Image (cartoon, rainbow, N blue to C red; front, side):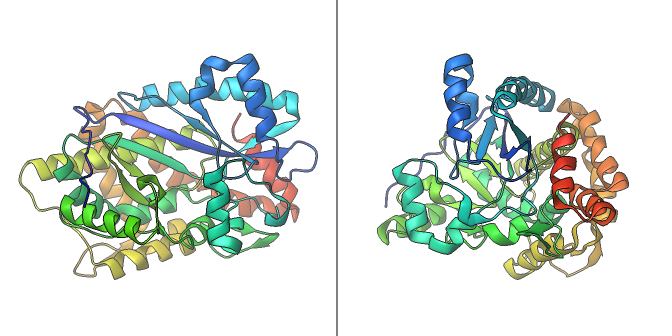
Length: 373
């Protein structure tokens, strides 16, 4: 069994990955124009190539920050890259679309990005792999030592439904309202190495798991473990991949602040010798489903004793708990915007309101695109 080195971060650094679909300005449908966009980036803004990444499908682009100290720095980084990319998409006649799913696009018309890794994924996963018209936000938070990683990861799952309910932006699929706030969460877990993480207690247990995965050919590389929350050993981070795609910078900053504060909060509790709270996997799984189905109206399981509470009520108390940490991490303003999402409604609710008013899913696409302004 090969050891997995964890390159610890001396500070709780921050990194954000923001996935967008490319949509045609005329039809609102997905546009397989990522290759054209990357060609323009190489020609016009080569210094930004490291911040603009390819993904599985040619309808997708991912904006990535560098290693940041805090939320304002990460949002400023993304804002700069976003400005560059939007100038180029205008030339191509496409828009950036930030929700977790597209309301009416069909998988059969989407093209794969060239590359052996992508082709191999589709060859293995077949129909389910081709269905992955989904977009999300990933947040990395630096952890100083490997022994902290798995206890923090397992405890973070207690707040999984809070993060998913706030970010839920994927209620529609293939021309229908699915009845779910986050259909993306349900779709992505169909891939064989995706979904909820196993709750290991020690790093050697994780190493043994990875060894089994490689021995049996399930994965070739560690990054093929696509859990909703996972260790990123080479970066020295915990990567939180729970959130649906975000439609605007304001709500993105709120979710990034909440994740940053939660991880630091749990890190400090562990470092102080506290046993972090965890829930049984079957309770975590139920909470994921409830948040995906009901969003901000979900009644979640709070703890191992099976106490239950409306997720928005629990969020209100959580924000009070995290407020001192938010001030230390320079993100108090951003964290306060979490309450605005609760008060004003999440993206899935706004999309449904547009559909009720217009009965036109192209209008839903236009509303999501417009939120990025």
